[in-house]
Amino acid sequence: MKKGQDGSGKGGKQSGGSCVLKFLAPAPLASAIIGKGGAVIAAMRTSCQARLALTEQGEVYPQTDCRVLTASANTEEHLNEVIRQIVAKLGEVAKAGDMADSVGVEGDLKLKTLVPRAAVGGVIGKGGATIKQIRESSGAKISISEPYGSGPSADQLVSISGEAQALESVLEEVNKQIQMLKEETWFAGWGSASGAVQAGYGGLAGSTTLRGATGGGYGSSPGIDLMVRVAQGLPPYVMEDSRGFALSCVVPNRLVGGLIGRGGSGTKEVQMLTGTKISIREIPDDADNRTLNIAGPLSNTCAAYMLMMKRYLDAESQASGSR
Image (cartoon, rainbow, N blue to C red; front, side, top):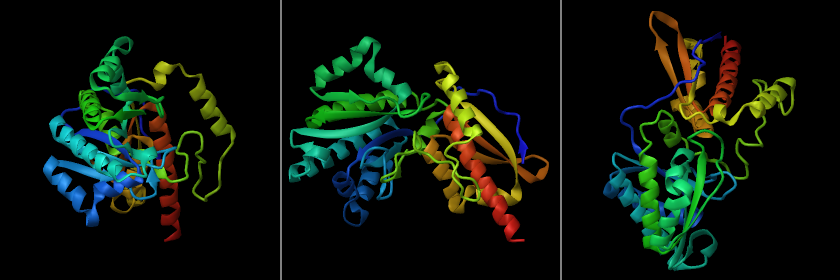
């Protein structure tokens, strides 16, 4: 395995790209959105001209029991229509009663959305002026969690409660702030990563055990301790650099299938867990090798690289055993 030279900071803007919004869907809301035989979500996709994807049952956002609903569309207005239909469904579920803790009650609904850290600043405004104005004009209650991770794409949970019209008003402003950033290099990675984990699992932060190709745990080792010390000793501007970072290495063609996984499931899983963008590209005049490229916030990129190296070693071991 040959190491690439592209390990420096890299960022800027990218052209085009979809508009994206993410919601947390507790079980009653998720069921209402799907509908019998998937009829409701299919109708929403058509009427909103949007792509809607729910994480699988049992795949929830860390420290919640909510599935992640990701909506993407060509325009901000299409996502505003998604907002209106989701809030309407939320109202129907709340009206049915007995689910106040998760969805609120009629006239005082509850909904949570995931917002990249870079967009939260626009929601809050200078000195908190914007969020104060939103609260006063809409009558909604709004709370914002600490970032889950670091860098501009780190998720922050925005919790909103109030009347249906208030929720729509707040979410439309959140939508506006998020889509203003859609051409940033990190945005596509954020949009494609749900951040969901298996229910009962705390997520990457603070509870991950790295495992080698043979399955042995590495909860503590000199290498792990070194990584933690280095990360903790870095000044915030390194971890939070909005341009993002890129890592690349060269991998043999014969192991690409094992790296990617069936239908791309392997790279998709790593992208989802880390909020990075992973690609494998051909190398001109080199039929035997390809480049593995990972881009995103520094800590996320390093985590993705480690997970992909586990896949590399597993693929290498499997290829050796099948000869």
